Length: 192
Image (cartoon, rainbow, N blue to C red; front, side, top):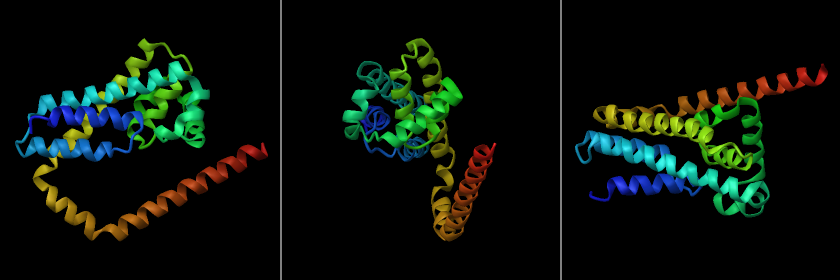
């Protein structure tokens, strides 16, 4: 138990840099363990924020020092592929520094946002403002979810298992609707 806060910190740093760590699940579980009385809320929130902030800072520094060429060349070690990097670069150009905040909430994107921000030479101060606000919001949200839903954890899991098929259908409809929206938007933009 004494390693709980440090373990959360270290795993979040590794996960945000790009190693395969289920970050959201980890944070939610941390909140659940706070609810169960195994850990204290404030130190857990602090560990979650600091782990997230340090992890995204490492990704920023990799992007800033290594640049896009090196990231392309050695990116496979951090699960960086050209398609995801191009997508994040497009989002970064479209939404600017706000993608550093929003990127936390898109699985598989948060470490790319920092790599692109670093490679584009975004000043550290601007990076820190947006990235650390995102780290605070993201880590606090999932720890809070685990904490407040702790009382109903078993009921929620049972409900999810009972409604897997419905959830899958809703997800499939959502993905199909999004694909159709993109298709028609691209077609409309191409014809003009």
